[in-house]
Figure 1 (cartoon, rainbow, N blue to C red):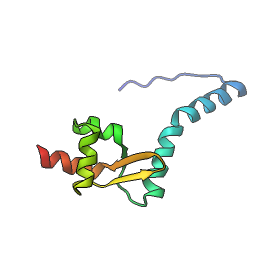
Figure 2 (cartoon, one colour):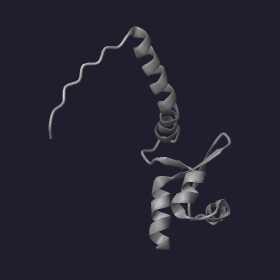
Figure 3 (cartoon, rainbow, N blue to C red):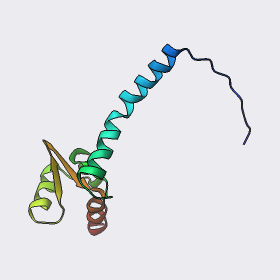
Figure 4 (tube, rainbow, N blue to C red):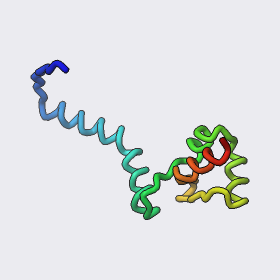
Length: 96
């Protein structure tokens, strides 16, 4: 791999803009990480319901039925519903 050296000059305003931009972009991921690790108290990642339906290729009603029948456990945080990534993996493994 070839090494490339680049010199960049930033003003304090450029640095502040860059930091603000990064903070806005990373805020949702950091919030999800806090929900996953601190609030839930597990090391298993929590996946939003909409994402879980895409991963599993099923409708929301199917996930609610699986939840009712005890196949998977859904976690509610406020108005949002999350599914543990391990449950998604296990369900995919079971259905394939």
